[in-house]
Length: 232
Image (cartoon, rainbow, N blue to C red; front, side, top):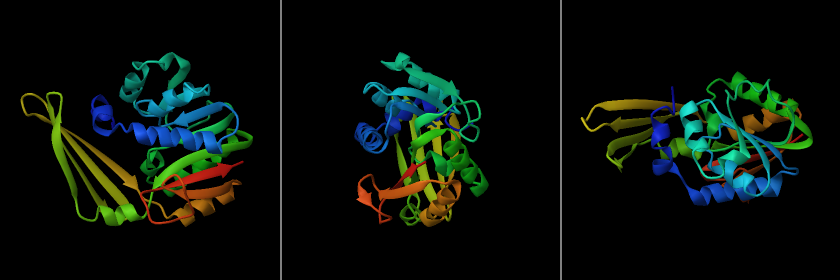
C-alpha cells in the first residue's frame, strides 16, 4: 500500500513548515466555524496546527503507518485520529469545514470517484459550510515531462525519488535502500484534472466555488496548485 514505507521518512523528506502555515491561514481565511474533518491528513502537521488554534479536528488517512506518525507528535491528543478511505465518508456527521490538501484528491484516478467525493462532502457539511482542497495544476504535466530525479540519505537509509508525467498522470517512484542495499519500492500515481472540469463537477453538486492559484492569486493562473473554496 502507498505510504507504508514512505511514512517512516515522510516528514524528513517532505515536511514543509512554511506550506503548513499557508494551509492553516487559508483555512482560517475561508472557513467559518470550528468543527473540521480533514481527509488524507498524512502525518498530521496541518491537523495539529489547526488544533493549536482551537479548531475541533477529526483527521484521518487510509495509511495506518502515516497515522502512527501523527499520533506520536506533541499535541496529538487534541485531534480525533481515524483510519478511513476518503472515498467513503458515510460514518461521519456534519462539519463546518472539510479539508483535503497536499494534492490528495489527485490520487483519485477515476473521475467518477472524484465526483462521488464531492457529493459526499456536500452531504457532510452544515449549510454555509466549506469544502477546501487543492489539486496539481496543469502546469505540473509540463514541468515533469522530463524526469525529475533526486537522491540522498535520511538517517542511515539511502533513497531515490523520481517524478515523470504522462498526461494526464504523474508517476512518482520512491526507492529506499536498507543497510544491506536491499531496495523497497513505492509507486504513487496521480491524475491531473482540468480545473474547469472540476468546477463543473462542483457546480453539479451544488457548491458555489472560488479558485485560487498557489494560495493567494485569484483565478486559474500559471502555478503549481489550484486551491478550491467550495461553499454549501
